[in-house]
Length: 298
Image (cartoon, rainbow, N blue to C red):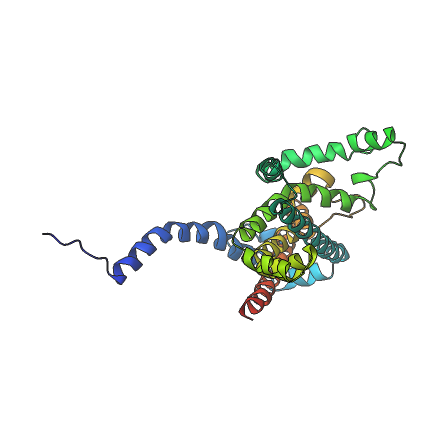
């Protein structure tokens, strides 16, 4: 009888590299190389940045960027928006996932899951264009509804006081379904015996959720937290479609401001801003991962 050859550990390693190589190449070509190229351009004079032999100016572009009051305001706006968006999206997603996972929802559970995930796969430009129409102060559906109810109009994207709220709502609609999906996947593997034991010991519903279920959701909280931080720190599309950085620069986030400078041919400063944003995103993601990793090791 012929014996089937058993793959050795070395052959298994080569099989792994054979499958991983194409993705590694794509990551380097379309992921790492543009980052390196952006860092190189940020060290050059804008007038010569795209020439075969650019003139290097060192950190001059970075000094100009940090001396630009518009950039500093955009950086503050980006941080404030990111904090608000992360808290709002994760809080809503966690509550919605816990609600779907409870016995309070009956036959409509599948419909609610699909309804919340559809915006995630909806083209973001089309979705934000609809939200821009809804929030229009002149003929938008939201103000039309408020008028029918004899309520004061909502400033929407036309007022500096309300534009951030409008953008947060649009982003919540588009992204929350992804975070809900991650929470539901984690809830599916939670140990229900612990919750049942706590119920027998007299713990109420909220105590069971906070002290039993929530600690088991640490992996989902970590994944969603890191992804949300990265997602909202580099917010761009919603600003392009809905606000164009306005009104009065209220939504002129770093990514959009850098895009405008690049469009004006100020390549050195634009890539310097992009590089600063990249390092902020990388640092925040690393810190969040370290904190989550330490918490899971306890």
